[in-house]
Length: 371
Image (cartoon, rainbow, N blue to C red; front, side, top):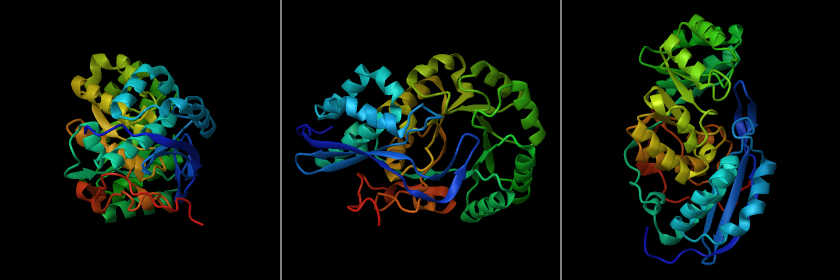
């Protein structure tokens, strides 16, 4: 971090944002046709503006738009006193339990402050945080979440035509849906594709999960959240029975969750979503701990994220490339009807995003909400 003076905030404000999707996004926990986002704007005395984003999800962290506003209103006076990354780290360390209960809400505030600091100091987000600058390319996953076979076929065909070879497939627990979709995957996908299933805490019983997935007879490399949240021991048995890795999403929300997987961390994959983890600083700490323990990472994304969260996730992915086995998100206006950043950050052909195409600090459109 440079030796410039800390920022001085003139105003902090919060608002909800809904952006329509170009098509509905579905899985076993929820179906969405619009984004559901909290935006926090930090304005400095020098006229710089930073905007941060969080995606509260009641079925993931227990947060809602209402609870996010309540968190902001309760703690906003504290954030007027934060002028540097060091101040922010200190607040995070002393309010760990509070952030654990409000990760997405805090994430929106943290990113607003960091983007404002970076802009005011004329630095990239990475330079501000003291981590390597973005470089190279980032490979993103295609997400197949349609329960209708025709929609699934169309979606898969579009991804394959676009050059995707890495897929996350939503499982619904309905044989008439899942078997048809998997058959289509076998028929349409080339032999070089890599597939993981996402069950979104579908089953209560490990035996039922093992039986159902074995009948699918499809070679997946990983399975995400097959059972109820934090059923670690039962997931270990599924891992052995199906000879596949287990991805933790809803079952891994904070750094203390390593306590449950530390003895065999190399056998797990953590879906690290910046909003879910409570911001980029906490996400970097989790990624660092995963690196030391040998746990692998998927850099995930909440459905409907704008480029603000995509940009933050890139910093984490870039800093821990050796641990990252897949990356989600960067849909931009592939999914959203519009994005608040100009230009939006989104993958291109084959799901590739080049670091050279990513802005250092966000360029926010003046007109955030179109008529």
